[in-house]
Image 1 (cartoon, rainbow, N blue to C red):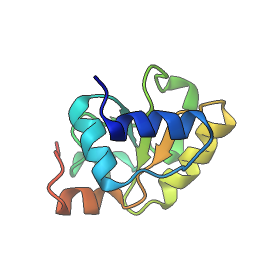
Image 2: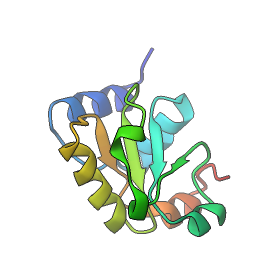
Image 3: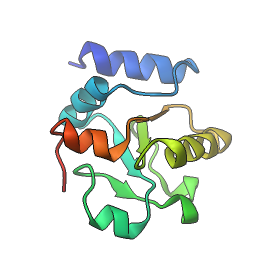
Length: 116
């Protein structure tokens, strides 16, 4: 059964709602394996640590069609700026279930999120 936060994520994104995801929502969705997480930082940043299970697709070489569409998509970077640009690119490419983790990787790590 899908929890309330994950159901709300799917409903909001499918209805063109909020384009960001809170830390708590991301923690829950990540733990449930209910989202595809895309790190848009450069490879060196990604190698220095990333959200466990995240796909690395740097904004400098971003290719929306290569991202799987089978789950809602969460994009993140260091501070939310690059991921916000990636969010726009995904929406322009026709992706609907996509959100930006605006706090970025530093906050994820500080809050004890699963890192690789």
